[in-house]
Length: 224
Image (cartoon, rainbow, N blue to C red; front, side, top):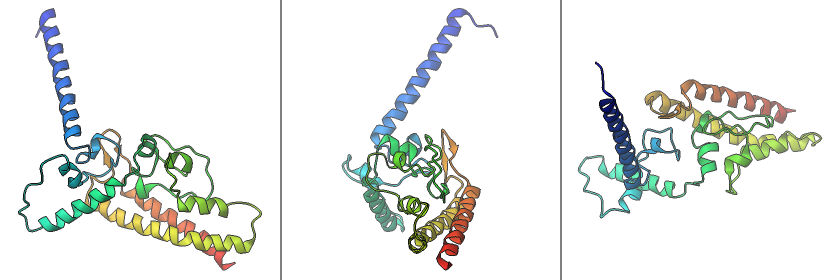
């Protein structure tokens, strides 16, 4: 089919108009739902299918319609708990892009300081400065690890630090094991629409192995 110049121009105009309408619709949805119902439209927590923080949505409306399902009381309680947690979200652009909120348990623990800089919507590494941004909360493991890795400290001090680090690593490993099960049950976990998968189940298995290696090293120091 041969298009005239005017017809081609009209088709292109229509395409542009359709795109503008589409992105305007997205903007309206983001504004209406306060960007909490559709997390893949932004990076607060981009690797879960959705964030059920309905209380935050309801605050800008007249109320929530009556829930009729048998599971409604449990769902309603979950919404309240998650909405409360989301109110405490440490939101800044740096945290969203460089912290652990996207990779979660898939980010490997580093037994030694790497010097790597956290990458935008990629790998946080052990870059504590950029990961925490303006917030004063600090990562317990990294702070203890930095002391543990110092040269010239006494054996007794190193053993004491190893004992402090071990429960932190054990807890993190437990979380990774739980998260692995969730990722296996729901393949949407870890997926974000513009970056595809931040992690897959094998990344979480790698993290579990990573924890075990660190625990072996810590236990060796404790036994000395």
